Length: 174
Image 1 (cartoon, rainbow, N blue to C red):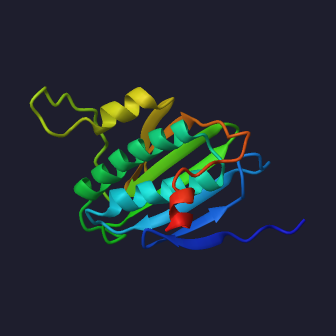
Image 2: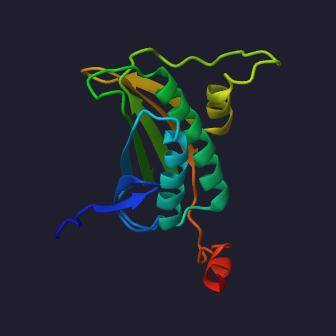
Image 3: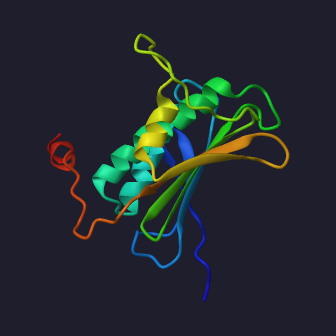
């Protein structure tokens, strides 16, 4: 059997590479994207995640949770990564198999992530608390050369009926 070549397309100005078509596929579905160390990276990561998970026909509530958690991890990676062997870039990786989505964000920093207790007046510092509360599991591992990957696992069942895009009618009318 011939192996399917990965598909590449641009989403939010970032090249996304995916394998597989829908959540009913026998093989794991994957998506990766190399993001710049920039304040727009969390937005790009949310767009990429939404595009991949919609294409894979994942339930909308799982997509929303994944977008939120990925945005938190990418924000931490952008804020915490300095110049390193990969020029301060962060890599988003998505893998769907067996009703579970595993999402990882790598950056060149080797500092382990830590859940904070920011206090009631703080404007930030709650990202990993959200990841811990909303995912089945989360953690990190150090990469062999430099950097780390922070990941989480979510239950993410596929949609059994056709996905409806609420904005499609408005776009067609315009």
